Length: 445
Image (cartoon, rainbow, N blue to C red; front, side, top):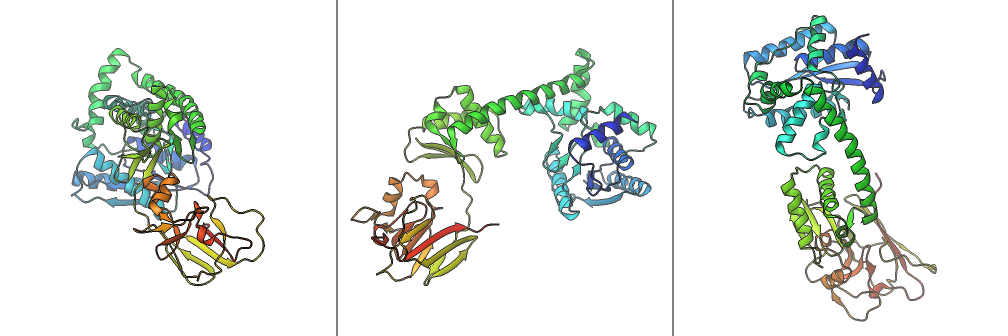
């Protein structure tokens, strides 16, 4: 059997994609790579296959002829064909085209209820990608090149060269599209393909294989590095918060690598300059008690104080609100509050950081709100005689400023009776037996 057939069969087996009930979606431009992939998948599998063609509408009649060629090929092979045509208003840039394609693929994934999308990236594409990333100043993670699988996208031709693909098309009498824009060197990848790689091949005729070997080495070494960094993070982190003091005991190189890891985890663009900026920000504010924030994106910020380092999301979420006038079970925004009569003795009271409390409402009418903090709120902390401003109470609990607006409170007018997850008011504490049990939690599912 053909080498390419065996390569793709092995790929399907490796990623558990050789089950006959799966629907394959194939990104199909009609070029050599995607026509080769589509032809092989049709020959080696019995799965339902849908070819996805996006007409970028950049080259007028030529783009329409390519769409027609794709459609005719699919009809001749008995493959379902789906196509959409972009507006002419979309910018003619590599970035805009890529974004439009992946938006199209995501739409098709939902439309056809399949999380398997094949793209036809090959060994040459991977080499071109590495050269491009090196020019941009990539880190070792970027040297890994194109991933064989990421989320719902699968790339079974990454071990196959463009030369092998063109040979397969010729031997199987396939007539791929020949996109004229592939020869326009104003596009960076075309420039690398037609100008840079030929020059590099004068130094090393096997430059494509050599660059792909570098990609494999980088992948293996990143696995080792990430395992080491994750072990460190497990020791210095708790609930996505990195202990500031422990972080600062690490070498400068490991500190910067941890920042780099955070950028990757949150899918943030990075370069050395950005990593150094955040590293310096952490060092400069590591003794701040109230804490400082630095913007990473519109919604994501990094927070640092003398206790913790964390990535925070300042996106406004709708908070639950309850108006409680009787006993029972209440729901708002995916959260549930319960208040019920309870007259048994309590052997062990919940800790302050738990979302259950036993309380005494003997002389207090049930007329409460569960809400976020407001100006003028006061609380009579458990164990103290007098009241204090809620702001002072939260500061005493060392709550960072960015977390305060996400806290919820059981309130009566402007008096806080229960700071949920932090503690109850002296006003509703149990002397001998509670009158009620209250509980606040997130609804399952």
